[in-house]
Amino acid sequence: QVQLVESGGGLVQAGGSLRLSCAASGRTFSGYVMGWFRQAPGKEREFVAGIRWSGGTTYYTDSVKGRFTISRDNAMNTVYLQMNSMKPEDTAVYYCARSRHIYYSEVSSEYAYWGQGTQVTVSS
Image (tube, rainbow, N blue to C red; front, top):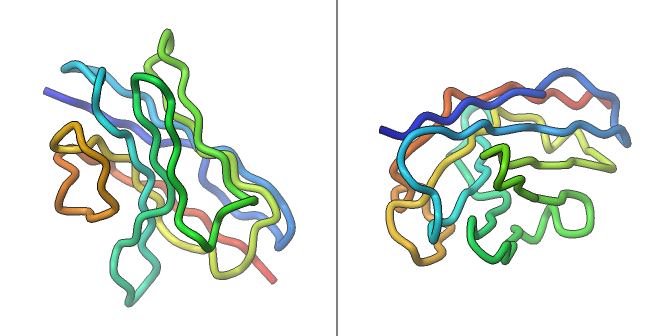
């Protein structure tokens, strides 16, 4: 069984920074993609960033490129999302997830395991 626990959300002013953490436990993560998704009220869940557990290849949606950085600490079994230059449109519940298969995808249905989510609010 895979367990994912997010932390680090909160309230920040526009232009500020937050770092989200996702503590992973359970079955192997090697070879899979760990993703961060977000869901704003009334909107669909969207892909934000992903990282291959093995090798560290990263992926970003266009709206966060240059502002967000995804990373992982294999020894700590933790994935991070560093968010800088934040904007009010970044406000959402952020979720950590592990891919269902070994190939990369931005589609939420291709992720099998999810955390409970952490709220991020950016004030203008």
